[in-house]
Image (cartoon, rainbow, N blue to C red):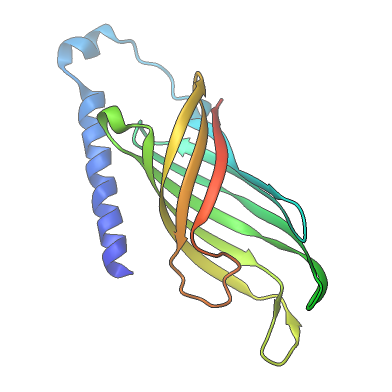
Length: 190
């Protein structure tokens, strides 16, 4: 896990430095530009994922994200997680419950012509229903690191449809996620 953290930090530093060099530009172009006041909302977007599945195993999921675009290559988002689950099993019986929590997501877009492809890291903290080894109903809370790859398709000015595949790196048998995790969502700039 430490090696993965070092690699991610190294990539982020390189991406931020490359974008800073691009933003600095040459002195002639800086003289022609007028200073603009900082506007938080010009760097922000609303995104996230949603999911619907109906049948014997019903899932309704909503996970919005408030994103901050540090530059054209790096985005950091934070938001809640909610999933409603209903299971109708002839052997195990009927069950329904909710999974809820929060998440932090980091996205790094590839440079150049590949700028619609992204690497994504996410850390979810979720509270979920679980039946322990003694048959007791409990609600544990679990931190789940996720890592994956995705693609964004522009659908307007500063608006994108996104799809990503993530992998649960926790290794926990209690995790409510099963690998691979396929997410579909959106990102809309303010």
